[in-house]
Length: 474
Image 1: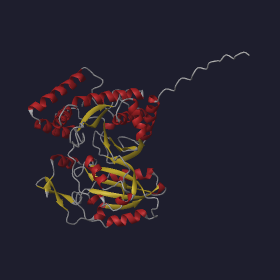
Image 2: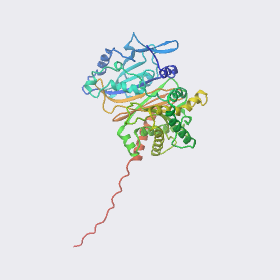
Image 3: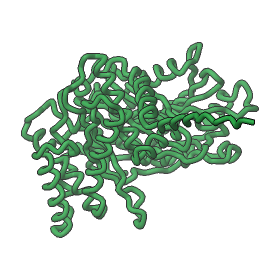
Image 4: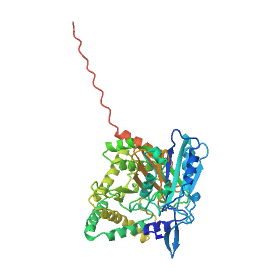
């Protein structure tokens, strides 16, 4: 038995009927070419035989004197956690996403360990899917990706002999949590991180924070801060229903755009999101005049360090006030570059302290009950690196890895992106009532990528001038 950390306990206490705080992952697999028709049924039967669970998958919550503890579940029941189901005909991706939307909106029963996994068959093309949901108090996004990769292999035959996910031990990654759920909760962590930093370490942090605030006061268009988010329908009070939308886009296409603009893949991701949200809000006649503000995790790991996760959360605008897609990408790149430039010489402690300090205005406003409708931003856009080669699970090739994050009041849309070697997989989770028809954003993402490709395509070479040769007289 051990007590939960402050952050993990906070996720449990902030959970409500309308706000389940688990994260999920939809994985799409292609069975081997010689797979029998009952491949999924055989796989389900084999997985049901694996009952040797390891922490945290065999631990449930227990509350004593107002505090939460993890205890081993002596009556662990795999049947409660593992579900084998099939889509209704015709088994399109539309039906799969509808199923995940319903399942993701439901709470995990606290009488059991806080996870559940679904093996889904009946998908067009003979594919199978796996949807896994785990409470954020158990596993964060970084640890979740690591867990999934540890249950897979680059060798199809070897992957068929590997244990299921619940037999793979894991733990929280130690990375800074996402910039949710609220400014107040983020501010508690911020204050703790700043207090831990020594005086000599704090001075450079304060200096850069002062520069950022001064730039904002001078209305530098390349600076975005907490408190600048305009009122938007994305930030209303959410309902208990969810809508999950997912799509993948070609990594080479996106990298080609990035290379043409001397930008990063993450810059292109943000530009696509900014342009897609601009189109979406325009279609609803709800586009704010000021640019949307996004909370974005960024890596500031230096090549010479041994740290696996030097992650900070910065604030950027999505340039939704700019119509031209190329100019929007350039504006986002300048904003991100300036934010990363301020942190490039920081130590890991200073990185965390600076990011925390920049979140404090929202925390203080929340504590003072001011700006109740204001959040850390209009949307969260998280970009997580995925596998760089083909991966296999139980003999089936991974063809899609779509994350489903969490929502809270003031955060009606969460976009999480996983970049793999061949595709960039987008997972959008939204409140069905606050953010209606969010699936339209997928089409707008493709439209924005096409527009960026057209804007960065090399100009055709001018046709060579035809010269008339003089004919030699004989």
